[in-house]
Image (cartoon, rainbow, N blue to C red):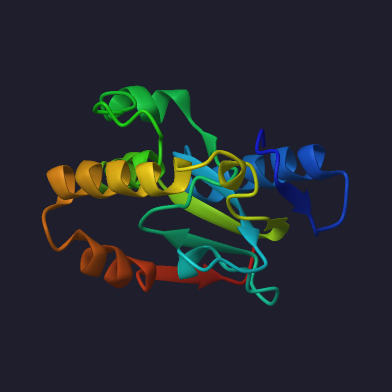
Length: 165
């Protein structure tokens, strides 16, 4: 959870709790490719928003706010594809999509949650967000096609909440 603009909103201890819940989820799902805390709000990726009544959610992809990645899953899909995208925006989507398509569970934990202050660091660097958005667009267009934004919107609705753990 190395993002400098997140604050956990769920009960501590955060790391021990996440580790315990990940172990339990792996008992249910098998080896997990991506485990991510839910967020209180997300203006970009609706499938990441916390449902406090649920335990966890299986999703098609995650926003890279604070995911835990299985190195075996990363290796299985051919590693991290940065494709010249030095800003990194979109790499999270592409990597987690590839993991899900390869059969690795991509999970959001509703009981480990955080608040993210979007782009608080990036906004400090003049021109960074515009350049990152341009790089992300080129990166995802090359991998998913011209209509990738509609694909992503559709995939945001491709999830299933689970109420037992």
